[in-house]
Length: 424
Image (cartoon, rainbow, N blue to C red; front, top):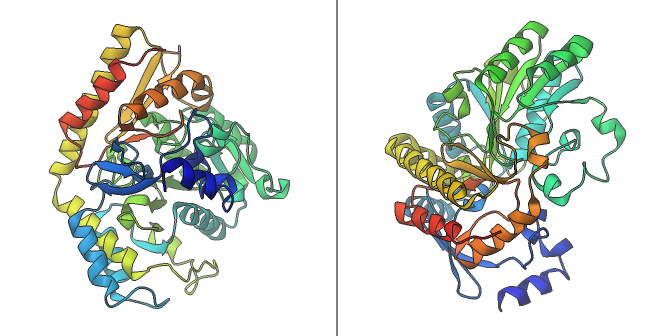
């Protein structure tokens, strides 16, 4: 079957024809290509088209598609184990590897997605502190848990809606929203309600309103405010973890969160999440403590095998991050130079192998309000132009461009050549 035939028939059986909203390409004037296979930096659709992939499964495929070592680990494990819902040595191996190679994670709990990691971390913070309220930031997306679906960025921004139907007011009454990179907005909340704030949850490098790195002073001030008010600081590194640096954005900013959430890369491309941090906090989880959280598929052997292989390769090859930074800078500088020459209204943000191109007349994009000013009409034209040139980028102004270690300078040159021929 061809791309359009598959997508149109999918609409009969799945809402919008998709299992995640942004895949529907609702804000761009075309149907999505239906992806059939991937290898390294490239993906192929059912019509036989080849694309240089700058989505990378929305971040996890940092080693490229179908990395030979990851595939071998999955195949070898599948011959003896798929799922038990029981303790295995593989889950010990991955947990121990993360705890011994990543700062600020003394214990962790495996789950199956980023959403599950963040919602569980918030529950744990509430159970540990005995408080109810959390502070999140407008434009930061922490998954589709009810408590987070307030000015949530990402797909919610793409859909043009403020939150989500089906979320009772009672579910969000304890969610307080501050402005990203604006510490005064957090100070105001703590002054008014600090005694009932259990945690501040933040993406240290926001990736769901486009890529917006946190200001160093802003993030360090969050740490100080949490300490002063007895609240926990949760870094959501679902996207930035093992990507902007092996030890995540917290290693770049040199900030110690109380809890860290992880997903995407830690599963090697398979569904996986985790949350971890200080031992005294993690020991509040059942069966040691009163905070209950469980998951039948958590620590699944296939996922653990893929995750261990991926993290070992990343840890043992620091040159991968040198390569990613080199490509990221080449891409950033190239897009900026072309935009200046062609007088395109573009702002570029990047942190390591995460990159965003905003179509806006503003000189900076530092928060949700700035991101919302972007011209999504121009973005739709840009997206259509790029995909026709064989450059696969996310179909939303508010998502990231991702690089993987199999990308080459020639792949970046192809991106820049395509962008250079773009006209508004």
